[in-house]
Image (cartoon, rainbow, N blue to C red):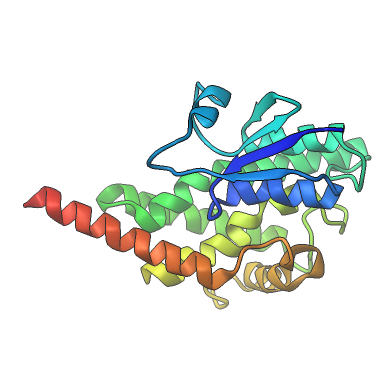
Length: 224
């Protein structure tokens, strides 16, 4: 029998991508919660280069990086396909997944950055939203009107982006500016194929607000 372990943070969209894929495939696994301030020897041994979650350990062998892990799960385990079978749709799924994954740092900077870094992050997030607003018109899913790889990677913009906005008070996403994106987002978080795999929004919001307050306190302490 396959032995599968997942090292992660409960609040991480990257960890949730992997959990989502495992559950879709019906893979039984052991979840191990990591501490970002006191990472376990298992995590450091399993991902010695980046020392980050998520890490999937399959029969004792670690696989790192959520995007890589998603494809590994799809190729290794039986169950519903995550990537489309059609080569063109598969390429398109990878394109949008990479586009979304590349914007993670921009999103974080927009809400948690300071000064010029934050202003640049806001601009880049608004540019991303313009692209998505155009792409997602009348769409529920990114590719071939079927749930898949890109939709899993979209969890950051589908849920976490709204949490960041509410928790920080920085409003970048409005239905007036980005009606198609907002319509997609509202359908996304309530879609049966999505909703059951997302963490409770209120829990994420509470965590984010505590994190922001801790950052502010640390910054104030440094200034003193």
